[in-house]
Length: 143
Image 1 (tube, rainbow, N blue to C red):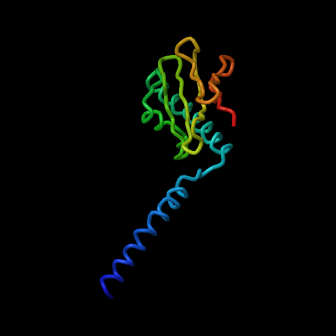
Image 2 (image 1 turned 180 degrees about the horizontal axis):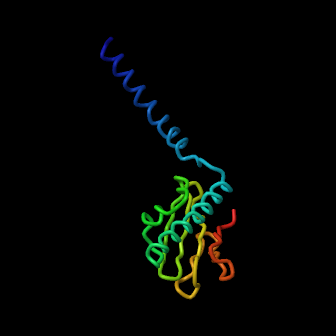
Image 3 (image 1 turned 135 degrees about the horizontal axis):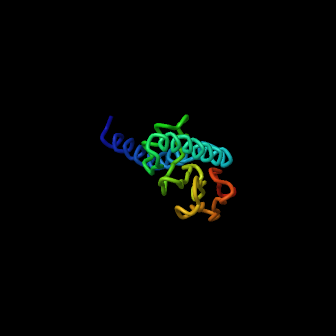
């Protein structure tokens, strides 16, 4: 094989690579679940967080923002695309939110306990806040 043929092969390879890499990246970034399923997974994760917080409270007589400690008491771990955050926690109340990697700029929030203890969390898109008469009920942005 001549050096000219080798250079032409390498050049064609270099020209071919940039076209295929973005297509592969686009495939990897596709959502793995439908929006309604993503919301259901966020709600389920927040419900499981209730179990974890209650187990923690039974042992320490206080809630916690330590997600690792709370996960130990959860009956089921959240879907891998769900990101949980515990914002406030104390002896009588806690607040948290869930986001899903396949549903950007949307979230679900939860408030458990006395509404006087902490600021009530709001969802990312709609700014919706839990109601005092519905403690422990996940509230999510509309689809």
